[in-house]
Image (cartoon, one colour):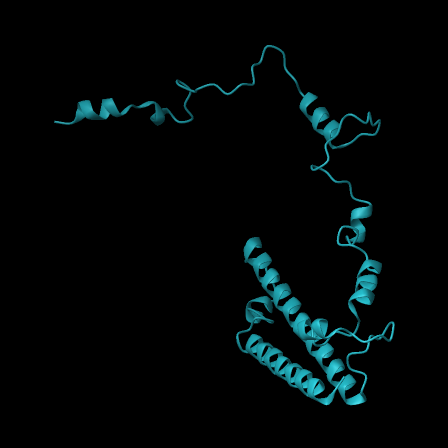
Length: 200
């Protein structure tokens, strides 16, 4: 790669690094990373509503994820700048072939050619398989309801049926009926017309 292109990519990388560093500083100033740290530092969250606590946790996790993403971007840019200084910029670290200019213009901090990057991405577990380990032992309760496989084990539906069978009474209709004459308080039986008759 000639010096003109190296200088162009170096300028682009430095500008991108500056903008990423500025973004991190703005996130610190706006408390995006450590949002509402005063409320979270209470000794007890007992008096806080669960949804408020969950909202604070979500904001905190989002800020940390954004910070991690921008920090990783700075690290990639630093690696690309050091490879420019070492004279290895634009060379794939896996196969040793030159990375195409179109790829470098799109992703100036790219370390691998398109083919090698695809191989690396395919080697990573897919998003569907990248699930928490506790899901290996937990049963999917509501999404996959299937009675056609004739399972013998006592599952979620069986537990609901057994609770429904408990304390059944004969000749009792459990349908909701309009409660016309049944009141919880005797004053509820007084109609509005009786009040109107008392008015002068």
